[in-house]
Length: 459
Image (cartoon, rainbow, N blue to C red; front, side, top):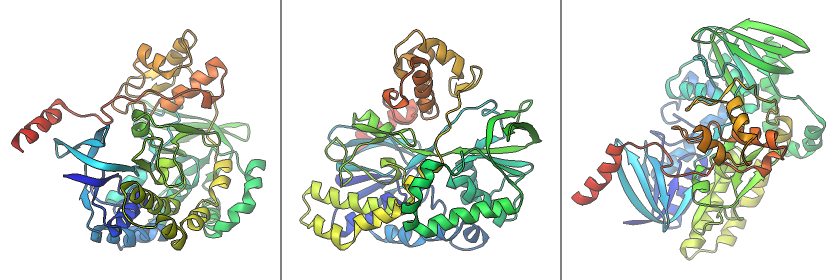
């Protein structure tokens, strides 16, 4: 069987696209790494429909129930707990679930697999007890788990503010919030008038900050963060207001923004654009979400960070673009106007330029002894040493050091390697490329590969 569309990812963009495609009569397979629909923003929404966790997670979380229900009722085929480890020409996709591999065919593909947190190495970031805010929120949404002991949050952006208020709402403890942002700056002030179009979101952010300041947990102007401990996290050090400070810590949750997932589009040779404000690559796409590879579409944060509301709208737009690509007899321009998709997306993105200017990625140089590639334990000093005698090509670093060859395949070190190369060669960061991405896109065992042949022989 050849599906009309394979949608990768069942978050806001993927679910809204699947619902719309089914309304237009397309056959749809949705492949999802998670065990249930919702993506990161609505993770566990069907299980957490009521109770204290749902209340603490807020009204935006609860809004996921309607779309999840519509997706379940749409008739789209759903394959949860499934990884895509290879995508080939003519849209043959190789999947793995429950230890077995299989291949599926499609007439078109939609990548709606979201974003990942931006890794920012610092001294001690590999210690047990240090993890990302996103990982902590996964534990909260999946199992109602709260961090225990002396819990600190460090970083910048809406997510750590949101998570901190969620923890406090569930009577959890936070010892302090180390704000690493530059604070309100001229660039952000210039973007503020347009942000008023999304006054509710702006008000939410101000409320989160006010609550943390009122509880005395917010420490502003933090730099030079260091985590220390013997075998696990025991202490933090940082500078604020020109003063070096220390504190006991059992858990440190860090976050410095999110970046689109681009491994799939890089592997497929799609054109990408550099976002200078947030320092990330995103696949170039047209007004329907189609990339430079005909038949391959992107939607949601996978096409550029915009948040869940914009992701939902971009999923609807991509569905119409896919319908046009498939030759489904429907007036896509008329539907785009009738559903006010451009206006809705514009309003959903109104706050984004302000946030991008307010929460710029950190630019601090990484010390030589700090591990950059956790998989292969490659330090910044090793990367700099190789970079001084090589071209400004991340793949030269990979060949010489194995940096980027581990299970994460450069997801945790790619942008850091790029920044170090730009520093050594005195280049703008955007002029340095990313790693070349090779199959498989996700780790796969030999047994799973062998099962592919066994399954096809049985068929």
